[in-house]
Each structure stands twice: as C-alpha cells, then as structure tokens.
Amino acid sequence: MLTDEPFDRSRFARKRTETVHGLDLMVSSPEDTILQKLKWSDLTGGSEKQLVDALRMYEVQ
Image (tube, rainbow, N blue to C red; front, side, top):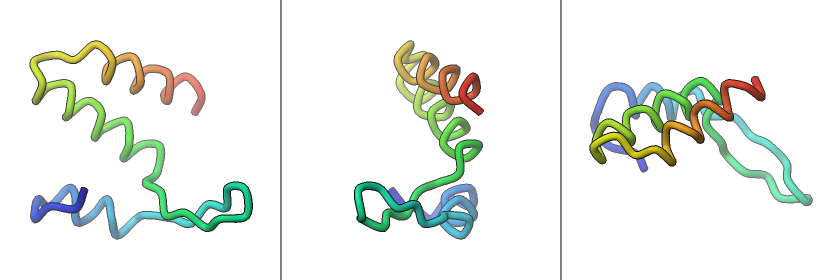
C-alpha cells in the first residue's frame, strides 16, 4: 500500500515490472520487500511470519 511515508514513496518510485504467466506486474525490489516485512513485524509486536518471510527472501537473494 502506498502511504505518505517517505519510505513508501521511494519504494514505489523504485518498483519494477515483472512478467508472470504473460501478465505484467509491478513489484517492489527484494530489498524493499524485506525492509517492509521487518517493519510489519515490528508493528505487529514481532510477527514471526514476517520475520521468517524476510529471512527466506534474504536467503534467496
């Protein structure tokens, strides 16, 4: 979701197009997604799912 926060504005400015099954999709960079998941984890009191997702994305990258 795009908010008025500076990080969100810069994250959306860096989005890129990926083609999946013939569809063009706009996606955030892996680095931005990891940072966002860490932020969501913090906002939800330490969501383990968000932390594990961020770790898995880091491992793949």
